[in-house]
Image (tube, rainbow, N blue to C red; front, side):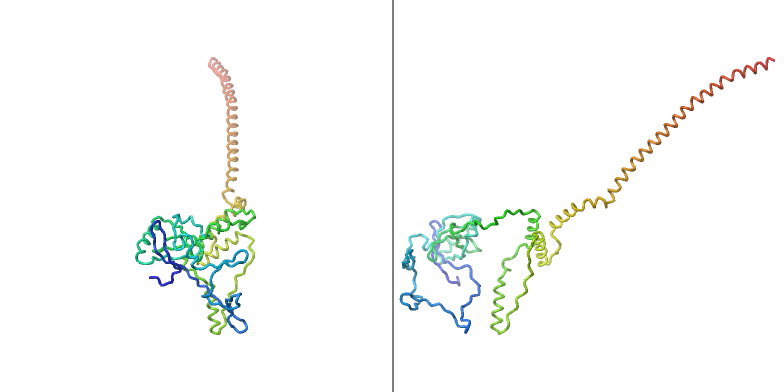
Amino acid sequence: MLHVRSIWNGAISFGLVSIPIKLVNATESHTISFRQIHTEDGGRIRYRKVCELEDREVAQSEIGKGYQDADGTIIPITDDDLAHLPIPTARTIDIVAFVPADRIDPLQMENAYYLAASGAPAAKPYTLLREALKRSRKVAIAKFALRGRERLGMLRVVDDVIAMHGLLWPDEIRAPQGVAPEADVTVRDKELDLADALMDTLGEVDLADLHDEYREALEEVIAAKAAGEAPPETPEPAPGGKVLDLMAALENSVRAAKESRGEDVGRPEEAAEEESAEAEVRHLPRRKTTRAAPEKRPAKKQAAPSAKKTAAKKTASSTKKTASKSAQQPKKTAATTKSTTKKPPAKKAAARKRTA
């Protein structure tokens, strides 16, 4: 059983099926409201509703509605007139279509309501519509009349309840003309990489952990003044300044986000890789002169020609030796020939001695 007051009673029209329902606000405001007071004595400032014809204050029960025509004429409109509007949605949430949820532009979404089954006979058709929405993974688009005008709504399932979001009509959404920057801006891949790194660092959040810090601070001020104490001091704002380097701003944002999460505050991997690549390109000539390997290569190249020269010298010397040997061989041959030519006279002399 609902413990909150319904703001509208009617029925959901689902084809030929009618589901009696009650409309309940799904949201509530926690905003702290103020009263207007007279600053001199703290007295309340009130607005009184006065009839300008009779010049007297009137009660709420005497106040009705009226439409002011273009010529200033007031046309009275009663609640009975509104109850008998010639439209089918006066007391009915008329479903007109079922569409995928991503077809609905979030810009159209307004207030949210819960639809409660009204009475035991409505439980079965209510559950049927709820389960049909679950299985189809779609939302229902409907028309309904509330607070004097026909509205557009979207029905979807939240837990075990059918919820309805009021939607603006498509012609009530302004086109975003003249809002985007007019200057032609080019975003570099490095900047996008750092933006992605910042998004990854911030990560996800449980929406249940978010709360209104402004309201909490305001409650502290009210409690302090009610107790006759001085209100808490405002913390010093973080020093700001003009950011001229978008890359530096992104890097600092990533670093600050990591610090807030207690993570390593080193530079993002993408930024570090890019910076190392830039440094490598900038210092590439210096690295060539300082490395040992490039110095050995020229030495090897110098050693190779000396080896060739040595081999050439050896070849030349061997050639000279061979030539000298070949030159000496004719000399020996000539000497041998001379010696052979001198021997015959020696033999003849020996023969002569024997004869004598």
